[in-house]
Image (cartoon, rainbow, N blue to C red; front, side, top):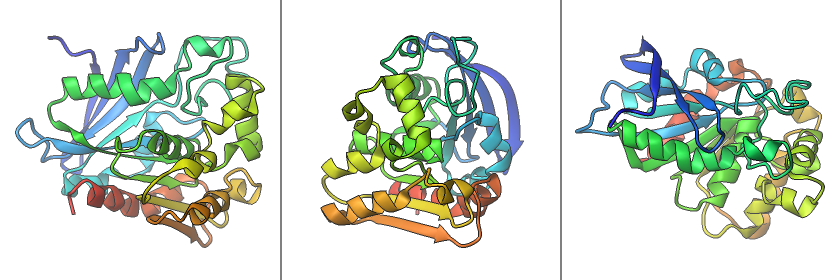
Length: 287
């Protein structure tokens, strides 16, 4: 059977390979971009566990590939990395490209229910069902039974919510500067009102701090936030609200680090990338 993916570029790095891929998505009804990193040890006879990394607002898979340097830590551990795109592309829906924090590159990784977004902006279904099914079918170098998830900012929101909504699907979760309580910040309120409408009870179904209230058992979660992150200072991230809920429900296994002097950028991500790769690697049996 022919692969559903087109390989647009192959780039060697740290002994492994980046594959820049595109495929036609039935869920979003668009062509989707993604980048896959295969460590040097990955083979059909020795499939590698996978860490999925969800990027932040305005980003594409290229940003973290070129600036995040997760792969330099993942390579020697035998960990594969997947960098999906942040939204469907090429639609030109009304208002889709008018602001940087809504629409194109700003899907918030949810399934939209409000028009005109509900036809194509189905990123939750794409990431949890369609994409992994296609990926594991096409790349026997990947171990579908060992998967973790991580992300940055909007992608940190996505990683936390997908982890909490799908118990057991991901062995661990980690987040750099996540939007941890979007119903209480302007980014989240703008996105949720646009994608979901005005029913704030529906919003809570896509909010990590709200979802955590129903969590059972330990968390295998790592969060890093920079103290000089302007978005943190402006109240867009609210990791302390996520921490508060974890304490209220008595959940163990959450580590939150406030990194003195660091901001929201890829300088921050690349500095602590090794910690997040190791966090996943431990959960996936590589350490």
